Each structure stands twice: as C-alpha cells, then as structure tokens.
Image 1 (tube, rainbow, N blue to C red):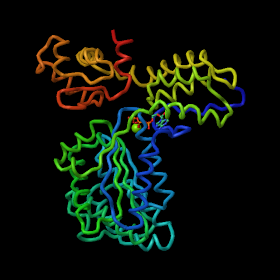
Image 2: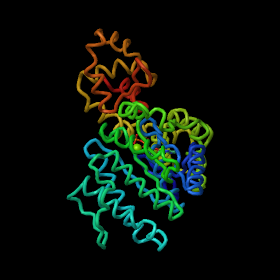
Image 3: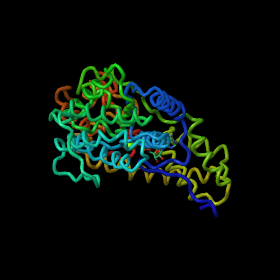
Image 4: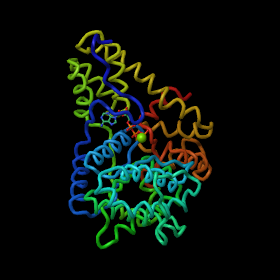
Length: 394
Ligand SMILES: Nc1ncnc2c1ncn2[C@@H]1O[C@H](COP(=O)(O)OP(=O)(O)OP(=O)(O)O)[C@@H](O)[C@H]1O
Ligand SMILES: [Mg+2]
C-alpha cells in the first residue's frame, strides 16, 4: 500500500481502465465516421469488432457510446444474450432513447414526433405486454414496423429513427456487445435490416457497432452469407509492449508513483499485453508496494497475487464447469499453448478418430470457450487458458 496514493487500476469485466491505451487508431477512425455521418446526414458501413475474452471490447464499446452521447447522438446500446430475443432488448433500449428524445430540445422533440408512433407499432408486435409509456398518448403508425416480420419491422424502425435524427441534425448509434450470443434467427433479421438500410439511395445517419468474440464474423456469416461483405470487420488485439507500459505508467505518474525499469519490464513480459491481466498486475503490485518507487520485488509478489486473482476469476470456473470429455479435449489443445491447434492433431493426441471427438468439440465451441480461427484449427477464446490448464489441469 502506497501512502496517500489511491490504487488506480481496474481489473474486471467492462471496468473503465485508468488509461485506455493502444486504441487511438480505432477511436480516431470512429470519431471520423461520427463526424462524417453527422455532417452528411448519411449512414456508413456497419462495424464489427471482435477479440478474445478480456481484451477490452466492452470498454471500447462503452467509450464509443460516450463519444456519441458527447456528440449529441441518439445512442441505443445493449448486450445480446442467448436467453432473450434481440428484438425485445432492442425495443427496450429504443424506448429508453426515445424517452430521452421526448424530453430533449424543441428541435429534437419535433424531429422525433413521428418516430414515437412507429415505435408503438414495432413494440406492439415485439413485446405487446411490456410497459412502454411516454406520459402522453402515442397511437401506432398504421402500416409501419407492424408486419410481424422482424427484418422488415426492424428496418422500418431504424429508418424512422435515422430520419428523425437527420431532421434533428444528428445521428443514431446502435451498439451491441456480445453479439455472438444473439439467436441466429435474430441475427439474420438484423443483417437483413442493416443490409436493406445500406441500399437506400441516401442511407439514414445510423452507425452500427457490434462487438463480440472471435467467432462473431463466422456467426454472422452463418446467419446471412452476404454478412461477410456487408460489415467492416476489425479485430482487437492485446496491447503492444509500449502500450502495456503506458497503461501502467500513465496512471501511476498521476499519483506521483514511478516504476523501476526491471519491475515494469517484468509486468509487461508476464502479462503479454493482455489488458485484464495488465490491470490485475497493476492493482496487486500497487497494493504490495511500500514506497513511491515500485521495484522488482513488488512486481514479483504482485504478479503472483494477480495470477491467483485471474485464475480464480477467469480460468478456474471455466475449467471446473467443463465435462471430463471437454477437459480431456482442452488438455490436448493446451499442448500447443496459446497457438491454434490442428483438429486432426487433437484427435491424434487423444488416440481417437476425428469424428469421435466432434461432440466435445461442438459443445466447447457452443459454450464460447474455443473457436475456429481458420479451417481445421481450434483456439481458446480466453488468453492464458492453455497456460492455466498446463499448470492446474491434472
Ligand atoms: N486499452 C486498454 N488499456 C488498458 N486496460 C484495458 C484496455 N482495455 C481494457 N482494459 C482492461 O481490461 C479488462 C477487460 O476489459 P473488457 O471487459 O472491456 O474486455 P472484453 O473484451 O469486453 O472481455 P469479455 O470478452 O470477457 O467481455 C478491464 O479490467 C479493463 O479495464
Ligand atoms: Mg466484454
């Protein structure tokens, strides 16, 4: 514990890091798109950002959401889940956004007037029993977003939102996290809706941003074949050595705390730039440090504690939830460490035919623990999973 210096580090899902490093390129591109969409009043290609567990997707999506709010945009943000239809979640979040529009400036309220009625039509089909009051009477818009076909209704709903935003001189951000979790039929409807909007002579000023695991591009392509060409795909990587050091140094400097070169190198090396682990190391090293200069001993002890925390929070439960067939399968994969494993090689290691291992393979993909980085290969979605299995998975 460093006297009078609060610990700035934030390990944990979606927690805003004290310094968002290594994301300036993607954020600069994003800001440029926001600017051009708002000034032209026309939409851009939808974005998909995928990456491994804990690499910083949620944090980035939330930052994009804040930037859009700061720019005066209408923001609809949600986290997809396999247990809830995407359409119902969308209805709930569009409702929240519209309630805000209803209390905004006169110009915004006027622009969105017709959208309330379209929303009513949309909502009556999607979630007829939900509570969606506005404090004033809103009748459904006949013939709009009420066909009962989700793709058509969603396209009409989003178009109405976009047209209103254009009239108000702004844009709409639709941001969905964990998109790979959404039911396939819902993803298909969403793809169709976005595809349809993109084909307009003058697409409405809507920006779509979807984030999820590395399996997401394949999941979208499975829902609609043209998804491969429709979205602009980007991957989010672990932090470079320089960005890792910056993530540790910048917040420390603000508290007038410095790191010895050896301590900094050690954390950078051990963390591999994995953002969740970087935050965990920062936090624990800080907690064990006794003075304002963090040394190698602080780093060594702190890294050990960080590893225990990450083991307990990230790997242990995933390992223990797996069936014994899945565990055997993952152990065979872990021999390749974090590198992708050839499926034929996994089968050989298990002494089985490839067809005989398809059940654990499918179930591990289904549960989001492994994915197919390229044909014939499998890899873990959680960085460091192989290392954990090699240390603990006996
Ligand atoms: N660019 C960054 N620089 C420093 N720390 C970061 C960065 N991005 C994320 N982090 C930290 O990494 C951790 C994980 O971030 P986040 O929850 O956004 O990851 P994620 O990719 O959404 O993970 P999951 O796949 O489990 O949802 C958090 O503790 C966050 O503070
Ligand atoms: Mg996340």
